Amino acid sequence: MYYVNDKEFNCSISVTLDIFNDRWKLSIIWHLLQDNKRFKDLHEEISEITQKTLTVKLKELEYKNIINREVFPEVPPKVVYSLTDAGKRLKPLLEDMYEWGVKYVEEFGTITEENMCYSEKNRRKNK
Amino acid sequence: MYYVNDKEFNCSISVTLDIFNDRWKLSIIWHLLQDNKRFKDLHEEISEITQKTLTVKLKELEYKNIINREVFPEVPPKVVYSLTDAGKRLKPLLEDMYEWGVKYVEEFGTITEENMCYSEKNRRKNK
DNA sequence: CCGTATCCTTAGAGATACTG
DNA sequence: CAGTATCTCTAAGGATACGG
Image 1 (cartoon, rainbow over the protein chains, first blue to last red):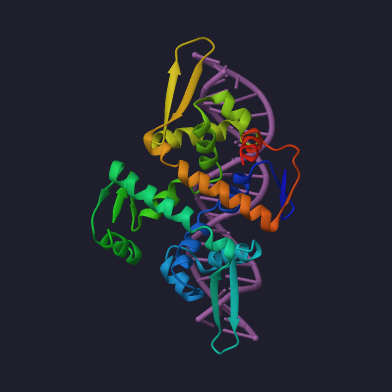
Image 2 (cartoon, chains in turn yellow, purple, cyan, red):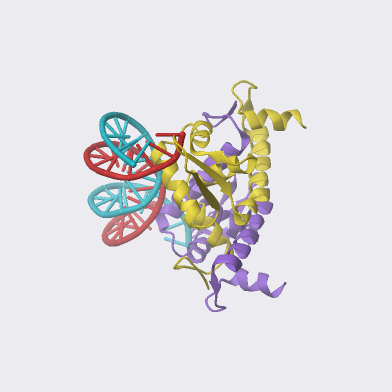
């Protein structure tokens, strides 16, 4: 049995699945892997998320030691989010997710080049 | 832009995240990676899931071409679920999740050997 | 054994307005 | 800029009973 933050798990993978069982957290990590980001930047890049939900998810990730939150005492305020070591260790996992998605679309989807996100275009160029 | 099952995505990873953004699907895949399973077996092994939710999630996975459903015309009925090629390609991803969980628990959790799930005990032995 | 059919509860998430 | 504070709503999931 594993105990993490007062929760019980009987398998290591359950720990991971429990942390990332919502719609947003892995998406946030994906963007932070690219670079440290301000709240505003994340909000723009993950455009479908609301400000409130982003706030909640960032707090959860901070509480679980996956991201750092650094406040700069300026006016207007500046807050920068970055990955902890545990967060950085998610990189291979997310790259697997990316690669799996590429193959899945090849097999079951269709592609048009327009409106592709920035990082996606870069990835396709580097192939 | 990618189109899969009438949905739009601007990045390959969004496709993956969208499919697995619930609490159960990856857990089901994890168990099917070990072996093909009957409905009853999955229900026992993923003990916290309700019968209804398991039914729904299996249907979704079948619709998305990630698992196969094979019905044996017997009485009582027998239905066996297995992974498609797309499903099997999730193996490295899930093993990354497992490994990430191991490290995460080492860093932030505590462990007791009791009540560990079967596959977990095997994995620890083979180390 | 392998599901459906209902009914119900709740957390996640949206919309909008407001503050240090 | 980076959040709170409410208020509302929906859909995922739970509980239970029934059916081929």
